[in-house]
Length: 75
Image 1 (cartoon, one colour):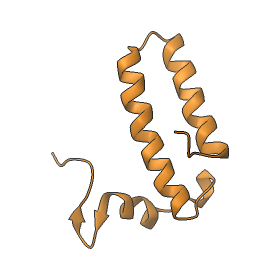
Image 2: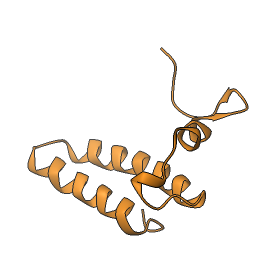
Image 3: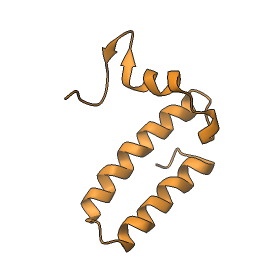
Image 4: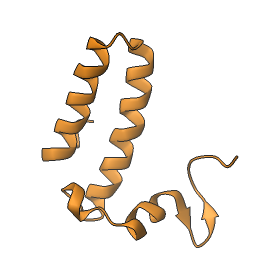
């Protein structure tokens, strides 16, 4: 998460605070915030620094490369 800047870093920090307050397990918070941080870091590497900058094609490029699934899972 150290490479995150601005809004995306703030979103992760807020998620951690709220999750702790609601009693979520700290191990779950760590795993989930790391996944989100990786996603946001990718968005920033592609030039998206706000939620408005994040487009559907950009999101899909995080999960797929020319139709091949890179991340996530299928049901």
